[in-house]
Length: 469
Ligand code: SAM
Ligand code: SF4
Image (tube, rainbow, N blue to C red; front, top):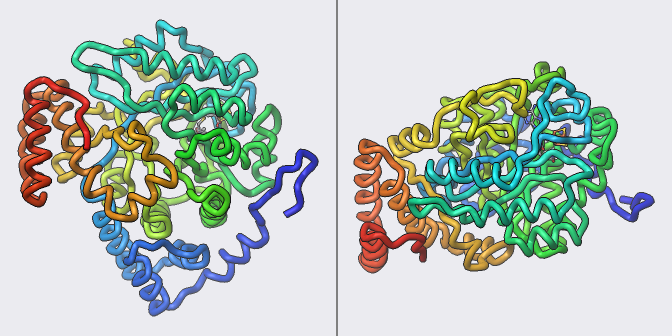
């Protein structure tokens, strides 16, 4: 672990990670059940235990992994599901990531950066659908520094539409900044800073990122350190599956998480595990060098749920409807819905243009359609932003989560935000099904809690908004 010339240390030891993966390819059934007994206590798993579960092929043992993941998921998160939408601000980019439609060498892509008015327009459309949480997405270009990014975040928060519409949490996915840059984002009130390492395998990383700022692996690897140093304590990490062996990248991702926990007392707030999707002029995206198949992907989600039980797991619309449905039970806690992946897409009457979007989407349904389906399956959609706005972030949030806070506070807050959605945005039949779900959920609360939540639901019926516990 020697520092490079910039003083940054590579804390991902590739040889050690391969050693863990290689030494755990075969695991006896008894050993799998022992690991699952431990996992059921929701205290997490070691890297070695995680690698063992990741490589279990036997169908019966796989079902045992899924069963344990479903239980842990239910115990910690219950049946609430946080919803959000990505908002692409710019697709201008000076990097050349081999897999991305936004790469600088893609001359066929129409480049666009939203103006302040266009940002307002896009946000209004999303607010009028009922969204309260957005993830802003940016290409990396020298034109766009931290001040400019902070200004776009401010624009989003400042856009308030009719029907009580406002965005209450802005998360962002942009290229890594320096500490001072991250401080500007913190000051403007971003929720989570999200950035994926893509792959932790250095040779593969070098091949896929031949030029531009993103070429610098260590600068990116230390992005979360700098963000945390700047006071952003909710960070979201991930790897882009399909670039390298998913077992290697998963164990490396968890090593990265452990490094943050050791250094800052808290690991990532969320993990993402996007799979490579076809993208305009990105040959590698049509033909992933290391494809990860559905069965492996499902196991990966379940194993992550067991390995880091209190870390949010995010699923995007890259995946298709059927698989998304299954993955909710297995561990996912946040879902994007109604997503469009190019700047200006939400106000585009000619939506669905491959010449502008970043990659192909697997689930094209609207927010309301997604809500309708998850409600049918007994999930409560949530737009809750209470913790972030009450300053319960980072280590403080993780401590609370471990004491059952999610069920005690997040669940009632989910019902309150869902009630707002039903009143302000839902069609009649969703309203009907949603209200009966809320009534059923209320019956599960202890008497005192039920009284408090019923009172707030009543106030919302009478026009108050943004109430939370
Ligand atoms: N430009 C910034 C960066 O690269 O970190 C942030 C925005 S970039 C559009 C967000 C993420 O999209 C990347 O980190 C990458 O994992 C993902 N991505 C890029 N191309 C993709 C593809 N073809 N399929 C799926 N995800 C892709
Ligand atoms: Fe640019 Fe990000 Fe796409 Fe790479 S992944 S080309 S940095 S937008």
